[in-house]
Amino acid sequence: MKFLVVGAGAVGGYFGGRLAENEQDVTFLVREKRNRQLAETGLIIKSVHGDFSFQPETITSGDLGTYDVILLSTKAYQLDQAISDIAPYVRENTVIIPMLNGMNHIHKLKERFSDHQVLGGLCFIESDLSSEGFIIQTSQTHRFVFGEWDGSMTERARDVEHAFNGSKSDSKASRLIVQDMWEKYLFIAAMSSVTTLFRQPIGPIREVPESREFLARLFKELESVMRQANAPLSGQITEKHMQTIDQMSYTMKSSMQRDMEKHGNVEAGHLQGYLYNMANETGISVPNLHAVYSNLRLYEKSRESSF
Image 1 (tube, rainbow, N blue to C red):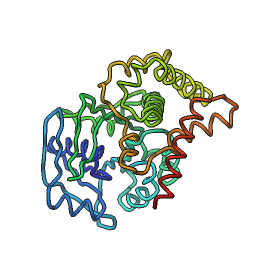
Image 2: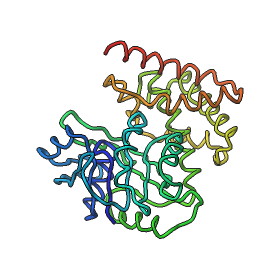
Image 3: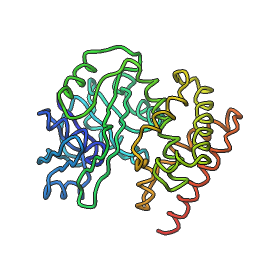
């Protein structure tokens, strides 16, 4: 299979790099600046699971190519441009697997491409891109999950899974991808909310009774909104997520928190805003989400005024 990875940053660069390390045919669609950087340094992964560096195959928007699988690893605020960039590479049997958090991007992808071409996908990873362009992956978690919307285990899903088999990543096909995506959405929406609100990694937040209680209440609010939208969440999901919180590294930060620390763009509208609007439309009271979203909107406003 020929893979096109959109972006060579903390997520796409990591999983695409692991595919390349596994001797798969991988090309990275990147911007000109990143392309020049990769030409000089190669793609460098520094990970607790093992370092890897190589000279990647790259293309920039407008170059020619044909690919079987497109891994979409951009942020939500880059999605519209990414859709435009990949359109020339999408053929009838091309498979597009998004790695974004949330759910709203699925609607956009299916509007532009066919339902058949878009699979479900998600990833769990703590990674960042250093100022030198190195991918720094710092925790045991490096999971990529994908699957068919109807839960079937198709040949193409097995082929993608096979490409990752033996790689230094936890990547596999799922028969419950819709549930997996909603449950990941619940987790990351809550975690990114509290880490950006309190400006702390998860360790101190779970230790202080008041911030821990805030997190538990926020989980319940978000769960209520999702269940109202008929999201297929498993039973006791908030309790399960709180157990996961307790097992995480003390210094674990959400990617949104790291973006804020760099004074960068954030996915507030895509993650928290989407659920906040759903709550307002259905009349669900979400005071904790209101506080979180207000904080994120203030951050966005201050960032806009600084440019």
